[in-house]
Length: 128
Image (cartoon, rainbow, N blue to C red; front, top):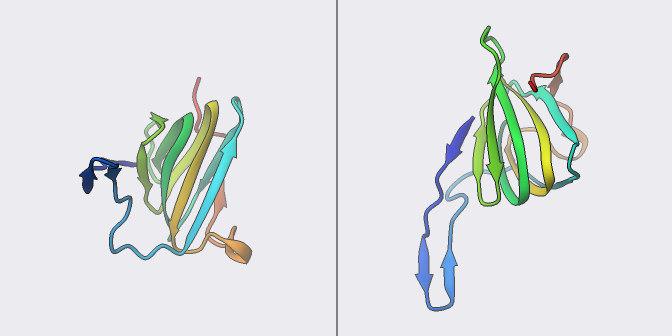
């Protein structure tokens, strides 16, 4: 997981603009809404990179490299956070507040390809 710091690219009296991406080839975009207490993920992608931008609420993002023997780590993501999930990173989400986030994907993920590069695992990497 890589947390991406966003900067203001333009600002005037009307407000500001932050570029989430510049010169990136995005293959799929999805808006995901989740209720507090929901669990998502528990999978990894072999070739796909995903970016998550939190637009509302918050969640615990649990992650670890697929080949790592170490325990999973957790990052608390809040509104305005942007993170990148590289290939072969196991990830799982624990929704701590009703939320909404946008997932931007480079690689297979949408439509009929939704599960083409998704590999699920058990048990969960979410720890209490």
